[in-house]
Amino acid sequence: MAMCWILLSFSLSVSCCFAADLSLEKELAALYKNTYLGDGTYYKKTPNGTCSYTPPSLPPTALSPHIKYLVALNKPQFHDAMTCGMCFRVHAEGKGAGLDPIEGDFNVFVKDMCPECLQGDLDLAEKGDGRWKILMQAVQCPVGNSYIEYLLQGSNVWYIKLQVRNARVPATEVRALQGEKWVKLKHTSDGFWEFSTGEKITTPISIHLRSFRGHDIYDIIPEIVNDVVIKSEKKIQFPLDVHLPFI
Image (cartoon, rainbow, N blue to C red; front, side, top):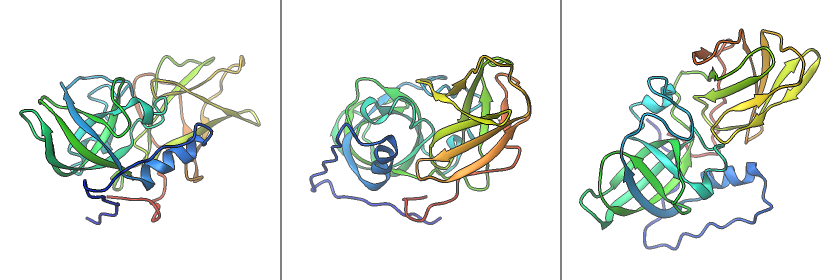
């Protein structure tokens, strides 16, 4: 399997600070462009998390053999759940303190947020002990031949709360077609997109997804059914971007 990512030695100084006025797209792009030095820690396996991936309905990517751990990403780089479902490549050399060293090169899937973690930190959803130095960099998720999925929560003909799942890279804009108008959905802190126009929502719902790289794809939500994984009607996925690290 091809691997493309940038690895910096622990001997190098890694500093990636960004001005507050940078757009979300630039903030996300920086996660793929730069390598971040931080701490790797452990927290026990939990069935839920901030990203609302409730087992057994984890996205296929999270169960990929190329993903070693599910993790909680540090709050500064979590971007109000915009990084839910992203993948990171991690390099560790067992440097730190504790009983269970983190070492080697491996990939992780973001399912949660670590509120007390600092930039560059990851909290592994595994039983373990210690605080270990790591380098991390975002990579395009190993989606293989799988497609984007959706899940509705608490939705009805007046209100839609939609989770976009299993994307190769994050969607930073989601719109739904109602009548002849595209309605922009609002992103929530638990990893969903929601909208309510005050008018009855008609199905099927045509949706437009845009990635942080500006790739546009279109799909259809055939009906409003809550708490059930909905497969992509048009079998869509964001394209592999050769300018970003990938697995």
